[in-house]
Image (cartoon, rainbow, N blue to C red; front, side):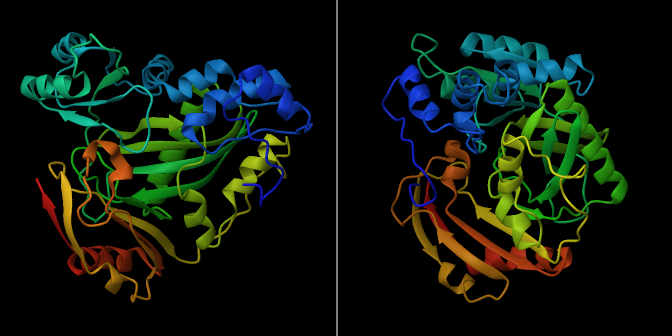
Length: 369
């Protein structure tokens, strides 16, 4: 990090000392790109007198139970949800909400430990999995939410999109809408592409809903990442994150778009720029990140063949093998369990739809279950 600027390392020191270390540098703004640093960044901002998400907004952005309650109260969503802290509360909540439902950590990211609950058998099995000590030992809280019904699609894409938005007081600019590939069971992301393949009226409904949701949570500054389900009843909010979406900046810039990192920094410095933060522009291509998670029952990667052949394709700019053969796997780690990830670009969405099955045929994987 010292190669990029002045490094102020505050690891291992108490909060008051960290504040004084940073204060001596006389910062003009503060920003983070990590979900797990949002709370610390908010506390530092308050101590240093710098603008950032308030503590109340941080709660709304990082705790899914708080966020859904606010969205429901403001009429932005109508999704039944309950906070669960042990096996009994999970089973009781499922008795009230019913299935299909989604169980996920109250604070978390990257598809970690997310379950689909269809019946009481699923609920009981998940309860043992996420609360292994029957509540006698400390465990993180989870939320159980009614699953938002999907809108059937006729293409190769997932049933949700993401929106990255720049917020400066009352002005909200939606910088990028990304499409998603179909989820791996139960709810694990397999990648994104930019721009999303949406009809104009659907795109407008998605961004309008996102604006309402950001205002409901009280967001006043910064870049936020919102996931939106494309349901039969219209777009529905899945969740909102108070930072830039993972890998979004690279995908947007490779398509000829602006730097969302720069936009986030400019906002932190109180410089929103022109009334529109981003000039109108047309993406020059379709960029993508395609990830391959292991099957939910896989315990170990046995063999992986063909990744090197993907590197010879003109459409693919980078392939990373995330695991070596023989390494143990755990699907509950979400995106951190992906076996390989490839990045690239094509001219059209139709080309991307044809490329995905070719990638799957090129790489062969075997697992121990």
